[in-house]
Amino acid sequence: MARVKMEAGSGIAGLSGRVGNLVFRMGAEGTTYVQQAPTGKKRPGSAAQQEHRRKFGAATVYGRQQQACIEGRAYYQPFVQAGNFGSVYRTALADFAKPPQLLAVEVGNYCGQVGHPLRVQAKKPCGVVAVWVRILDVAGQMLEEGAAAPENADWWSYKTQQTHPAAAIRQLQALARDRPGNEAELVVDLK
Image 1 (tube, one colour):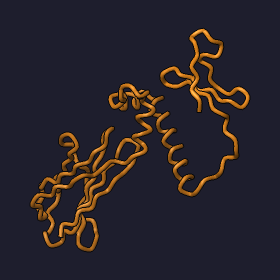
Image 2 (cartoon, helix red, strand yellow; image 1 turned 60 degrees about the horizontal axis):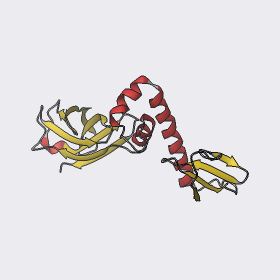
Image 3 (cartoon, one colour; image 1 turned 45 degrees about the vertical axis):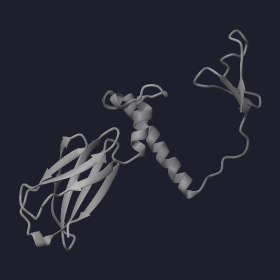
Image 4 (cartoon, one colour; image 1 turned 90 degrees about the vertical axis):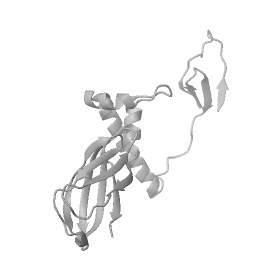
């Protein structure tokens, strides 16, 4: 790719598009770049590439939807980074591409008593919208489940609703969900 320097009054300053076998593009700083037009046939790609294309296509649809609706713009605007061509569309697209992270689960000295707080740390640059907690017994059957409430920063808290025999409790599962619907799960063995 060649970079073209032109005087402000020249006839092709600001030119972009295709002329013959050359493609002209404008750079971010106003520089015009010239390269040969691509040749060759588009290959279907591997299964992994096709899956990536499918996911990226879904992300672009989500980004456009969020940019088009008032609620989406209001949600993502505070997360738009200044400079680097930041926009609601790009921020929503990046949010769609990555699931939330579950960093920690604090159970304290939980041994089955009612009202005990279980804390979950869930993080994502554009925020986590819901955290769900499940308590499982030794056979893998669910003893209790419920939504955690936001506490502060990245922490969520769930207060147990029932009393369970300490010997029966085996696992705690935490599930975090973000605005696009991505989910992350963390399983903590209590035995």
